[in-house]
Length: 95
Image 1 (cartoon, rainbow, N blue to C red):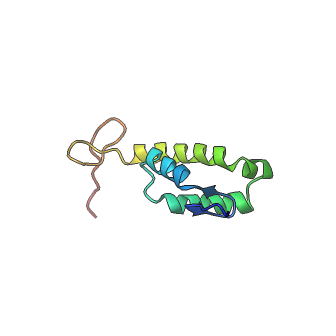
Image 2 (image 1 turned 45 degrees about the vertical axis):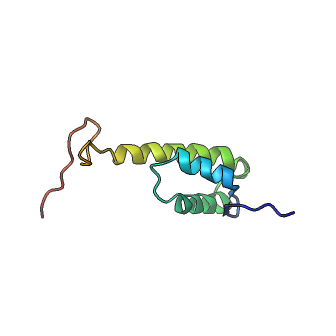
Image 3 (image 1 turned 135 degrees about the horizontal axis):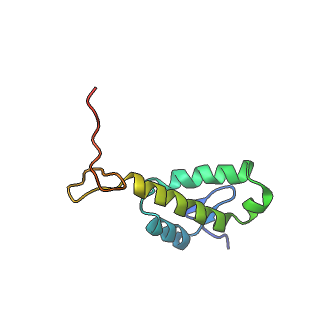
């Protein structure tokens, strides 16, 4: 019986359970499929063979790092205004 994958890339192959676990864990990544596709392309064509072979661990670490970055970039206060790392509102200047 052929195994069914929720994400079926060249290198990255995720079952429903694994995909859901990553989707729930990395909530600040808005488009997980796009990030996984880009990562899969890199693993398939540019990564060294050792990294490609250990794709699950390296991708999980990569997603965690990206999620932290997006969490910091998208900090919001209780009024849903974008804030900086010190908690000050970030305002765009008018042109």
